Structures are given as C-alpha cells and as structure tokens.
Length: 363
Image (cartoon, rainbow, N blue to C red; front, top):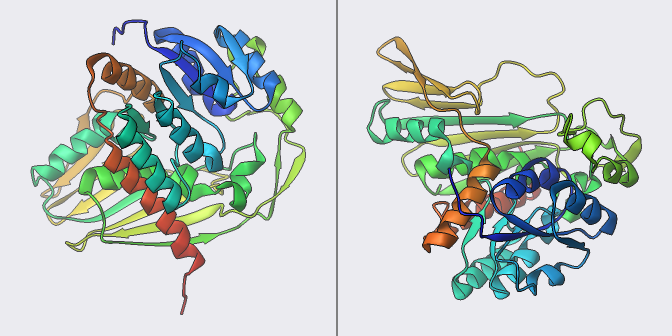
C-alpha cells in the first residue's frame, strides 16, 4: 500500500515488540520522530537503530511535541491505559498494544478520553479486521455455509517471553489472558459479536522462570542483532535471571452466546513442544471451518462430508496493517475499522475473565 510519508510518529516503550515489529515498519512507511523508554539507553539504541530524530525517557516529551502526530504504545500492560489517555488528551492519534486497560475504571476513562478528543485510536490486536482468512470465515458464517455456529475453538501458546519480568507479575497486568488469549477473544467478537457471559480458568504451572537480564535485553537493541537475525523471541540466548511467577501462565476462557454458541479460547506459556493443533476451529450445524495456522492463507471447510481447501492471501502482520490503517484514517479523516466499542468489548472480556478466575467455584 503506497502511503504518503507525512504522518509523524513517536513510539513509547522500546522493548521486543517495538523493535521487532512497529519501529522497523514505521521507519519504512512514515516519519519516525522520537523513541521513548524509561530505560534511556533503550530509547537511544532504538533511535539509532531505526533512524528516529531524537529519544527520551519521559512520555510527556512525546505528548507535548508539536512534530508528533501519532503515538504507538508498547510498554508493560499496566501502563497502557494511562499513556493512551494522555495521548488522547494531548490530541495524539494512537495505537495501543493489548490490553488497552486492566480494570474497568481505566477502560471507561480511556474510551471517554478518545471520544472527547476525537483522535483516531486502534486497540490491538486489529488482526481479525485485516486477516483474509478470518474475513473469509466470517463471510462463510454470515452466508450460512456451515449453518448455525455452535462451537468456536482458538489456540495460541508458546513457552513464554524471555525478555521482561512483568509478563509474569500479576500486579503488573501480566499473564496469558491479556497477552495471548486476547487473539481468540478478538476473533470471537469479530465473528459472532458480544457474548452474554464470560467464564475462565487459570493456573500457574511454573512458579519460577528464567529471563534475560535487563542489561542483556538492552544490549540486543543493536544492528548486529536486528538487521541480521532479529531476536524475535531471543532463540539461542540463555536466560539466567530468576523470576517468581504470580500471573497465570495457563488459561482457558469461555464465552457463551445467546444462541447457545460457546467459544473456547486457550492461551498459555506452557507450549514447550508444539503439536499440530489448529489455530481456529468453527463448528456449525451443517459444516465446519478450520484454520490450520493463522498466517498461512489457507482454511478448510467441510460440508456434506466433503472437504474443500480455500486459499486466501497470506495475512499481513497485524502491526503493519494497524500502522497503515491509522495513517489512512488520519489522512482521510476516517474512523478506524477496529472501532472503539469493539476494542472496549474485547478489553472488558479480558478483565471479566481475570475476575472469573479469581472468583471461580469448582465442584
């Protein structure tokens, strides 16, 4: 997509997500003005790596900057809401990584701030709106190709982040519901709308984990890592810093709908050996849809005992789609497709899922 290079970005939070995903793409399609991180050395290294004009450690410098139009927030979960509220109050369009908030009070304040300010806001993950496979699945469902949907199953799992301790800290908004189950929640709401009820189970499988030291994490923000092998999840690097785990690393979220449909959403940091479990499964009264892997551009449909493989375009990385879409919305004064009420719904479901785990009664 050819975009005019005039929207000026600031990025707050210069860790793995920023440097692997948003920063390289923003540097390619827009103007990267400033990088910001509470660890100033990370902001400096990120600015040098991706060509930002300047760097800082205080988000207020980004919000008050006249040469910044839009902000991407990729900090720890707990800080998302306040930073997004400040962005809206400062008149900055923004993309906020999931979760947009970790309690209902902050979520309501954030939605109110966005509506009051009129800024364009995207709550990640935007992926259901831009994935050709998910859009095709919705088309098939809406056209009654598999009949009334009865069961939706989503799976996302890996062995856990290696770069920051807050992923494993309950008080920091860590855990797999906010980090991984969110993808299935977002897809369920996109496909079927808002559920009537939310339930969840969560557990801590590993009470202690090892991560990279903060110094090691900072050291990887350098050309020899990002322009050659890109750390991604830091394969081959040996984590040595022990962390006490207080947030769930294993979860199941269940959404129930008025028509009897149930969505079962798995999210975990305990997939140490991966099996061939499909990313998405949708079962209807007349047929079924399976998405084997979210990024392959292929889904399978079974109807009348016959299997059909449907090819679609491979989905673009959602962070690229989000950046492009925000730029387009700013330039054309459009409302984002991942509309604010949708973002509110998926965030509210995650918050309720955490409450459900805390209040769970088992018999």
